[in-house]
Image 1: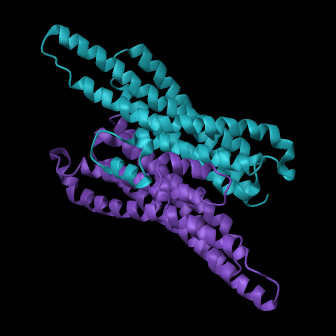
Image 2: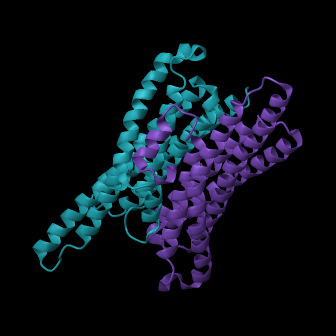
Amino acid sequence: MLSRMTLEQFAEALAAPTPTPGGGSASAQAGALAAALIQMTCDLTIGREAYRAHDEAVRAIRARSEGLRRDLLALVDRDAEAYDEVVRALRLPKGTEAEKHARSEALERANLFAIETPLATADACAALMGMAAELAGKGNINVVSDLGTAALLSYAGLRGGLLTVRVNLKSVADEARAARLRERVRRLEVDAERLREEALTAVSVRTNGR
Amino acid sequence: MLSRMTLEQFAEALAAPTPTPGGGSASAQAGALAAALIQMTCDLTIGREAYRAHDEAVRAIRARSEGLRRDLLALVDRDAEAYDEVVRALRLPKGTEAEKHARSEALERANLFAIETPLATADACAALMGMAAELAGKGNINVVSDLGTAALLSYAGLRGGLLTVRVNLKSVADEARAARLRERVRRLEVDAERLREEALTAVSVRTNGR
């Protein structure tokens, strides 16, 4: 399991010229780091006198960030499994008509799994970006740079996940489904840029004490 | 050592409400993932007939990415050590004039170390962003989404490192030195946005086959 590797081993595995792990797993890992930094910010905010007004909102963000960290660590592994499944389907025999049919069905299923997985990473990272932007105004000012880093890491995880989705979408045979997914990717890309601006501006305002 | 932790343990350590590890270590980790994906892209490009014209350039990028991966993994650890040093200096006694003087000297040294470390992360990530942008035109098209993810991760590492530098710069007593460092941070921030645009555009052009 990738999530049980050390940071050194995981970087080594990513660097290897093998089909997995790749950008999808790295994006999920970036998201997990973002979730962790958001949780840390919450724990350094909750219960402090200066931030009492935001206590309830910050507690809610904390609970969600802890769940998303676990989800994203699981997605590090699942992204590699999904792509391995595509490779297995590609290697199925295609001698007879029946084999060809079985292979193309297995491939379509594997391709959809290889899209859903980085899309789940992108969705989780979009949620984290929203949480980072909200916390930028409500969290402990002493860790505002950690929070900004969380926004940047979730941005990387979101757009990185979407790059993987876009590439894998090319192999989907069901054109109507592909068109719906492309539209969803496009909307998430727009959200990503808006949330990046929003979070970085909020962090910069807090950092410079304005 | 943080770089010997598993991905799960490292995320857990980041999430803990302790001074280290924080955004600086997470930024260096993002950079190490970017370096790994760049090396993978190079290894899937070198020696392939279709990319023969770029062989020499890609080999040079590969060698640099491998070195930067090791540097950035070391910076994951060093960033936490640097901040721990600041915390230690803050706890030094300040009863007598001599103690006050020794403490403020130790603190200034520690603060500068806590700036140099994330600045080294930012510099390494800026180099990786340039390499990703160059590779987007020269690397194996089959892994262009991994390369785009590398650009996004090095962007997060670069700007995340600079956020840490900016916050720590406030504690530097030597005003002339602080002003020089602030100017360097500002220039790297501008570079980061330019390189992000450049790399993502190049990746998008390759992904859409235009």
